[in-house]
Image (cartoon, rainbow, N blue to C red; front, top):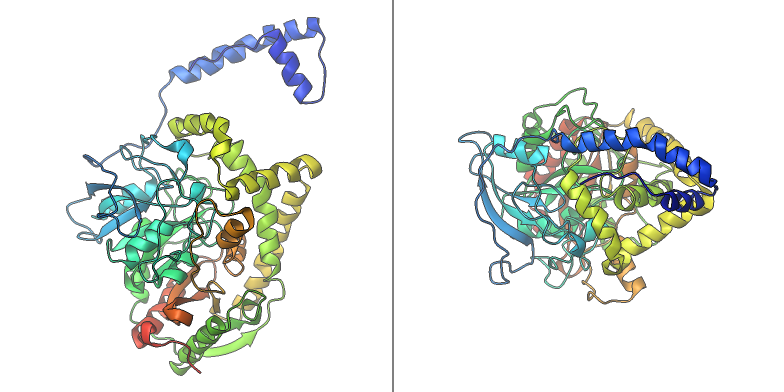
Length: 509
């Protein structure tokens, strides 16, 4: 597109928006001084983008009908064959629709992006294909991923294969449904407040939010650049470790990455928990929204780990509940500036910017009437907080991030893992698309109390199924480790998984 020097009236209007005035003579002088910038921008526009190459062939794609998509998990179906060999050869993968896959449509759950087709692959997509995986398509996600439930996606409403009519958990709704139903071996998820772990918990699968920056976020739409995580969702722990192994490590493009080491996570499989110190965090239980059977099932899982040889103790981390408030302070302004004013990718951060997608998001801003309650409220919250208070609350929350991280680190200095419920409740019924505001918001945000604080602190956290709650609904056990110590998490998670059948555990006394 061509950059043009603004007219005199446009400059005066812009000045007025920012609270100052300029006289006619100064405006003309400004237009003269503007000319070199106009030339520079047009020179930049004439230069090709430096974008990652697309290395694997892909053919036709299709939008499946309900017969081909019984749980609503697919946005589009396709088939992209990876390398001839590799650790993921023979494994099938679904990519959450917040990640770019060149030549395959991308909506990120939003009507305003319908028809957009990326021209790059996210780094994780390339890495999965390099590892030999076969990508079968894009999975449904919630509208711009701003929901932990499943009634906002414009592409389809995904439901739980285990509990029809109920949410599989969001915002990685389709990824959870496809893994839980066995339609794919693995799926990519995204996690800004729990959107990998919540659907893992509610769908009876395994999902990990790795340490912040362990997996490159290049080519993935985010919500707030300091809480954005991506990671694997699988049926079992072994596949999860293998999936993470294939994606982890710096890509030289995402400036948020500072990865001291990448482990062979599958080496942790087959170990035991004897001598491991596991801290049960009392503040993760007995909350206003905790279901008694969820608490009981998770506490029984802790006792089971103790019976396997772990040293299990109860600890208090008084700041844990405050983590949700800190998350809110960061995300209110952050989401507004990243998603709305930053056109999905924000500014002031280096890396790869998919210009075609940013252009599409800029056009989408004029269609705000299509936004669901979740995204509208987030934008209003962020805009009001910024306008009324400047960056004060965002800054305070970012400062308090260090205190929260230190509170967890203090306990992790004496223990290998933290333990608590992933979601404090089980899956709930999906409200209709036109549900009233409070019903929609309650459904979409009810499950983030225990998960969101670790998006702030950046600790790795996994959800594994540990039993069935009321009405045969899965319950998730969350294990949290030290930064970049995913191997410790996998060791405990695999030992637990291999020692019992979670679907017959139920509420154990």
